[in-house]
Image (tube, rainbow, N blue to C red; front, side, top):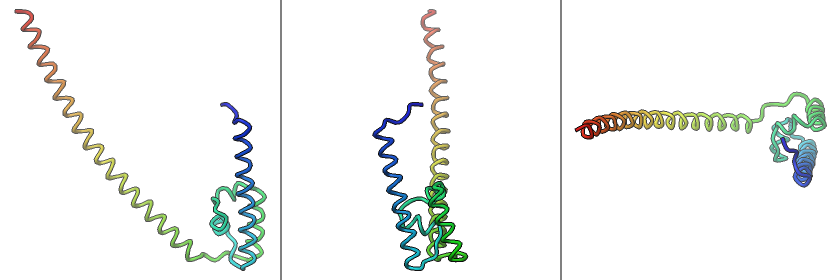
Length: 135
């Protein structure tokens, strides 16, 4: 595997630092306004993924510490609706994928049938040609 060129490495580090800065600012803002602290809340406020927050040891520690100070985090109604809309989206995409798979299976079966017919006709024509050439 070829290592990344220096300019790409630098760009990656700069993006990561910027995301960390946004996450710290989001955490501070949530604390300031007295909202419950959670990885999801910080991620939404900062525009980063929760995975990013969990993988950053420093940010993870800060969020867990702030969350512990505030007690348990109540389930926010926005999270519940986000989960149901996510689930609905997943169900819709799964149904669409299932329909596409069925359509593709039908097309494949049709193409196989046509190929069998074409191969049969080809074999018949070759046999007729062989008889014609023998005469």
